[in-house]
Image 1 (cartoon, helix red, strand yellow):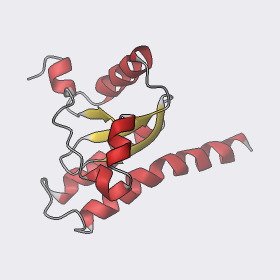
Image 2 (cartoon, rainbow, N blue to C red):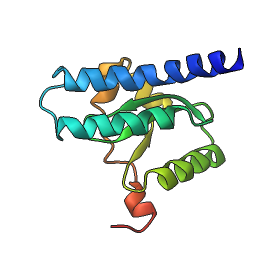
Image 3 (tube, rainbow, N blue to C red):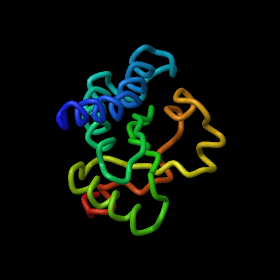
Length: 129
């Protein structure tokens, strides 16, 4: 019973990752900024990120970042999530979506088009640049 619950939870977390990947690869977001195979790799990162304890939902961004809606929008919770994400994905970028972001981007297609350029990349955080 517990494993069935865990599988349904993982599937629910992967739903936004899958929908954002399908939206991007389906050409609905316009020209892709990266090769389609790159978005498949980002999908794996997105699904793993979606299962993190402080992540309510996760999305693949058109520019290659991963966007998350945090469960707790506090500095300690955000720092712990970012640290865990960067340890697992040292060359990726994580963007936390604020309430202001969500007020502007009210749908998955709008979220996918958000930029992750304002977020500090894990490469910079880990000194890999």
